[in-house]
Length: 215
Image (cartoon, rainbow, N blue to C red):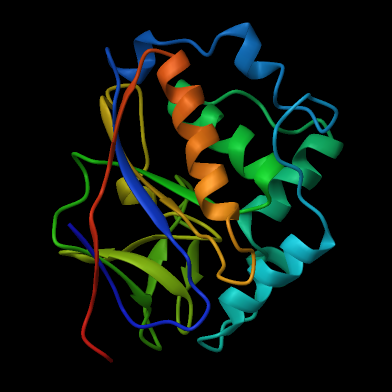
């Protein structure tokens, strides 16, 4: 079960994925890597309207989604344009393909590293977490985040290092950070995402979502 704090702009989707083997034993197939291109034949395309809606979503709590804090979906576009987007693992590669083309930020966390209960809500001022192996941190104040029992662990900008996938990952929790203004886009993104995962041999289970108490 995932609870969502009241939010006027958020249209999120969440699901758990079960892989047939650890991600370290599941190389991304060629058909998937070919989709890590802006010219790939795909069912969804991002545009300026999508990018503006996502930024408005992240601004709602007071966060400034610009510069190094821009949405992850925008980072992917630049990384592809500069030929810097390399394969990571099957789970992350599928996430990157879908986020790149849908324009929606997506978080993927290792289900064994995150502890229920799960909640989507604005992070408190002064909160932060480490987001890479080098120990760099991101200030989370005002940013919409996935929280687990230990606190914020993912968001539409940078996911926490503590909950990221690795070669031993067999199950993941995914959050699609969709926007109400983009009617139907979250559902279309989820359906395509699920189709890619199932083509790769994974099993997907959508999570029930409940409304949390007003903050």
